[in-house]
Every structure is written in C-alpha cells, then in structure tokens.
Length: 358
Image (cartoon, rainbow, N blue to C red):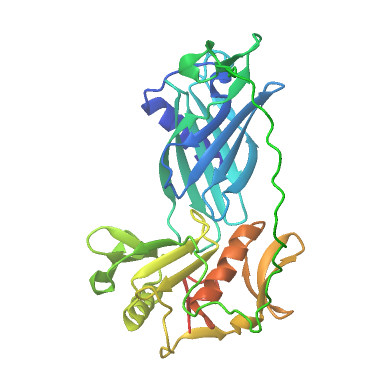
C-alpha cells in the first residue's frame, strides 16, 4: 500500500501544474470554501522541529470529527531543491481499522489551498474507492500590533496592513441612574395543578444527511467486475462487489418498501446507514428478510473500553462507533425519532446493505 501511495502521489505531482512555495506558506488553519461539504471541513498545518504536521476534521453532526494529526511529507519541484524553500505539495496518510486515506495538499496561492483526497476501504464492505477535490481559504486571525490602538490583519493578501481602532470619547458627563424601588409586592409564581406534556408529533430537530432517489428508476447493473445499484443513467447508489444475489435482493427490498431516501451518520465513512420511505420508517416484514428485533426503549449509548456503542440492555451490542460519541448519540436520536424496532441486513457477515424498519 505504501508503494501504491507513493506512485499515486508522484504521478499527480508530475502531471499537475502546481506552484511552489516554502513550507511556511502552508502553515495555518484552512477552512473548506464549501460550507455544505460532506468530507473534510478544516485543515490545520503546523511546523515544529523540522516536522510538518497536518490535522484534519471531517463533516459530522453535531460537531465535526477530529481525524487526528499526522506527519506530512513535503515534495519539492526537483531533486536539487530544498523542500524548506520549495514545496509543491504535502502528502499525508490516515489509516483506520476500515480504511486508508491519502490527502495531497497543493502549495497555497492567493490565500487559497487545494487538496485532493483518496479513500480506499479495507473492511470488505464492497464500498468503492473514491476521490474528492477540496478548496480551502486561510482562516483570518487578528493579532495585536506593537502600536497601542492599532491592529494587524494577518490575511496573506494584506500582510502588515495596520488600521486604527476608533475610540469613543463621551461629549458630556453621564449621571448615574439610581434603581427604582417597586411600590408593589412581588407576585409569587403559581404552580399548575397538572403536568404539561409535549404536544404529539413535535420532535426535536435533527440535522440528517439524506440522498433522495426514485425507486421506480432504480436497477441492478454490472459495471466492470462489480454489481451496482444504479438510479437513472449514472447515479450509483451502492456497490455489491461480485455478489449479484445481494444486489438483486437489495433492489427487491427497496421496491418492496418503496424506499426513496438513503441516509447516513458520519460520512464520508458512515457509521450508520438507514433508509426512509417518504420521510417515514419502512413498515412490516419482507419474506426472507434477515432482521434482528430490538426494543427502542431499552437502548442507550455506552462507552465500552475506548469505543462508543449503542447497546440494548447489558449485552446486545447493536452498533460500534469507535471513538465518536457524537455519531453514537445522533444514531440513537434517529432510531427513537422514527421508532425503528428491527435492524436488518443483506449479506452477513460484512453486510453490503443495512436498514432499519418498524
């Protein structure tokens, strides 16, 4: 894998027309210009003791996931150049229990930084490798100037441009206002003789990651060596690898329940996938279905060792969210919101499709 990573990185560097700059130009906090991105939202690049580190955050709810800090390898424009003064790109690798990710960060230009991400899955989930392009802008910070009453904008394009901070000088003396003493006795709150219950049908807002599709226009097709579930001409919904049977069973499930929304928790590497039919939970049993029943009133988020899990009771582990408590809490809210009572699988072990229903 290391050889493959190096080959990809060198190929991209050789075929691209990148600007070169010193390593110091990479330093700073960079924010994705696409606020609706479902991938990397922020990069923080630091350099200490001749080591460049890249810290990345991925889109998640309610807070973005810190993917951790990794050492970035710098590449110059030629063999004879020193990367400290001539860096075309930084390459950083992230490895998890289920994926390998490589991020190539191009040299900044005009306060913009471009990056390309390559993700390869190692968990036998039959998910296709994919790549993403990102554009980042440097986060502007305000630093105090050596002159009192002045500030310096550290935006790259406006270095050392100092602007005075206006000060307020009152035109007349303001007399203090004395508090007014009330002439009435305070009214004590009245305790109601009944319990106020929330109105039925009103639920707390949950920010869900959904993709809509038309199940009438969905079909199974072999693309290369893999069987895929496709909507229309080019919208790939799922990849089932070499298993035509699992792909056709997934299609049968989608049409049986009339599913038209595919939903995720924690993309780009979702820890939970579920489907909806017109905004509601699928209902009823399908013949030949692999389903596990659970009681939604008896499930909770618990930390087992160093990992966050959704458990039913004390021993039934339903889902594992690794180190993401936020994703586990969101998944629990979603299960309770739609009243799911069954967790269903296609192709266990290493299910190629997971869904929930009542």
